[in-house]
Image 1 (spheres, rainbow, N blue to C red):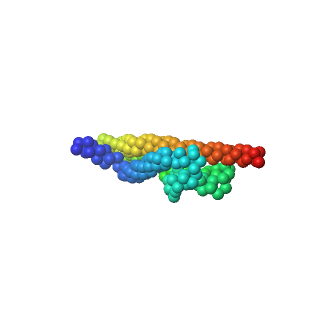
Image 2: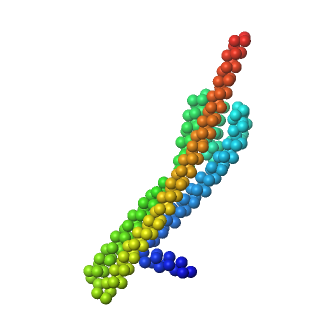
Image 3: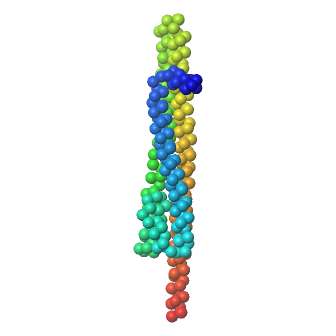
Length: 224
């Protein structure tokens, strides 16, 4: 109970600028949680999907791979679905690669969506905290200049508390937001690299199969 009372007193002493900082922190926290859940689910689904579809790709059974991928709307499903659809139509690596590049360009913005707001909110919390600091210092100087001598000490103390509390709260909000921004950016980049690696493995399998088919055609011609 004493801890909560201390927090309430700290917040009250910070003045009006504490409310915008709190709002920025809460919105940033909501975005961070939503992004973390989305990326964690995408990573888990990507790992499970690749474990199912990799044997079929390695065996060159692209029809079975298409059935596994189906209409999956997750990142790896969309990426492999685009490549497998193009492979079934033309069977050329260049066209399949272009289709998968388009798939990656479509998937990546969805994975990175709203994450950049965390960096913006961190800067905003810092700036609002500094604005509260300036406001508190202006109040402190005004108190010294115009207040009665008996009241100067109390007014000066309250104004300095407002300034310091706003600074502390702004920085205390900005630092976790920056950390969450860096963490989510790293997780997103790791997921994108996993998708790119899966695409490269699929293209290598396709190239190997095409090469074997070409060698078999040449041998059949020579045998004839």
